[in-house]
Amino acid sequence: MASTAPAPVPAPAEPVGTPPVLRRLYVVRFVFAVAWAALLLLGGSELTLGVQLLLALYPAFDVAAAVVDARSARAAGPLKALYANMAVSALAVVGVAVASTSGVADVLRVWGAWAIVSGLVQLLVGLARRPMGGQWAMILSGGISVLAGASFLRGAAQDDPALTALAGYATLGGIFFLVSAVRLSRPARQEP
Image (cartoon, rainbow, N blue to C red; front, top):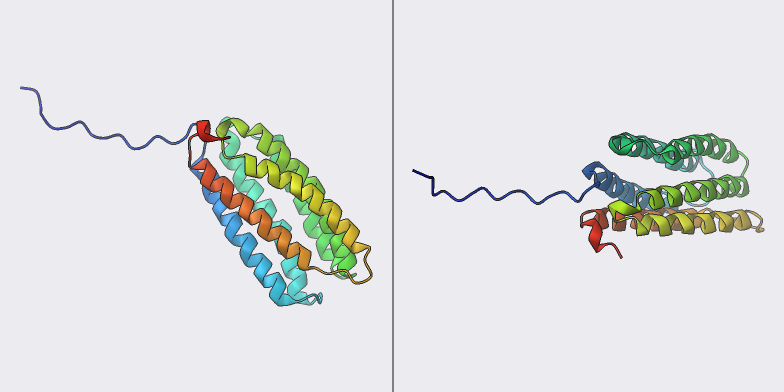
């Protein structure tokens, strides 16, 4: 006699090529960026030891996030651009630490160079991942990072450079990560 019990309902399928690790990573990056920006604004424009550590923490976190990202991407083959981002961000940690002993202008110069290079890398990674969906925000964020980096370089040449623009940069980048996390929750066919 055949069973009349209803067949189990399958769980919703994960969008193809979209690792849940990447979504979680993007959410963590959003939270970190917003918290970091708030702490930087609270720290003021003086390069106290706390602000110096905070400035070095941001690219250090970027290194850690790129490591997690690269590990999750291994199933599809590691992306060389992620390894480049790790190296560039590690150099930025050292550069920001050294520059923060010299002054705000030097910090902005290092941060600007890092924003340009890491923005280009983010743009390339977003383009490579476009088939998985949810990447338009990463592509846009990478392009904006390049423009912001140029703005930081110009800001370093001002008479009284300020660190406040870095907080806005981090917040906007965090928002783009959050948008990508949300978009990755949807099937790739919904990507515009």
